Length: 596
Image (cartoon, rainbow, N blue to C red):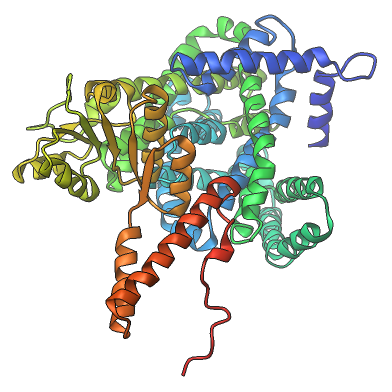
């Protein structure tokens, strides 16, 4: 690791020993120009970074010559990303995912290795080399997939969590795969059982040491620093924890990303969780962007030109076979068709760990240097193609994998003054007072069964995804007097509200919030009015509870009005100061008198 950092430093260092600010300015300028441009034309930030890297790299304008050194350091962006994911993954939640990690993940990795190993063999390469080549491609790019999930706001959704579970299993598979490479090497069979057991014990020992430190040292350390240290010391401590965990896992033969993830999980129930996330986030974004720039720089056009036939055959062969395996495993585990296709597209590429695996195999004599260069180019091309495939999937693929569309219509030039997005249990109830007063409504929904069921009750509902701008225009959002967003997923609702207020800022938007934190997020995105989906029913239940315990109707109304007033005041403070503000307005039971 130290050597990688030194090499990267030399890449952006001036020959006189000082930092070459021109190199830093070039990196920043490439990002600032390319990423907004690519996002504006709908190609996404990942493809923007990759294109910018190619433009300023050895085969573009030539500002940089050692792309691999930049990639090695920028992998810390992936490490920090996994730490943030871990902060959101409490141990109980991680335990509940064990079947997906060790069942779904192992099944996909195992079947994909078997399928992809045959590509090299079919092209005439030795079986050992073919196995290593296919295995490297099986392990997905954590950086690419995590970034795409975040941009699509799918990190917290069930399909997103299943993808994360598979990525975690792939990280765990690193140690046995490296051991297998050593075994396949000429003379590798002579390695002793003690050597293999020592490798396993080293990895388990690193995990155990991290768990012990996380449970008994980290939270007390942050409490001490919060009491006596400055804010910048807390930021330094956060980075120390992430990078220290990464180095510990690397020393144990595991991936740095796995160490950062475990550190995040161990701190997920800490009272400092949100501050740690805020401290790490800026570094994560910059380094992850630098990683994608490095991948773009590393695309060796000379190797592609010299070996174009092998690469042209191998890239689609690896990607199509991997997609078929992912789709088959998803359907076998009863995932919907749409989720199976989306997972296959997102995970179709090879990953950054392949660079390590191929380098190890080259060192052991399994791969020749030329094969290693070809495989590296194949992996990078697959990374570059993935954002394009995702864009094509989002624009055309979803129409091919939607549910049975019999009796379901797509919106075209709707013009009702009220648009309801999401026609489940909330949207249906919202429609009643509007219809009772004579207002015309248009409603769109993505659940075809719900659409058909609504029709049997006298409702006309169109099939449409409210996160797509073209659907919003077709549904009449630009001409509506009022829009109600009643979708049942918090991430979807937030995305729709943000898009509506950006595209149609003058139209009032009423939104359904999942909880208090989501309500605050919707206010920040510009929602004109929001309500927590369980708030009114909980208030009504509280009123009934005090009446049944002896309060009169008048007293109950007075109590409830006090609760509502405090809630309004607390919410107003939280919109400015954050979710933990206004706690003095919340009644607690810590100091209540003893029960009689």
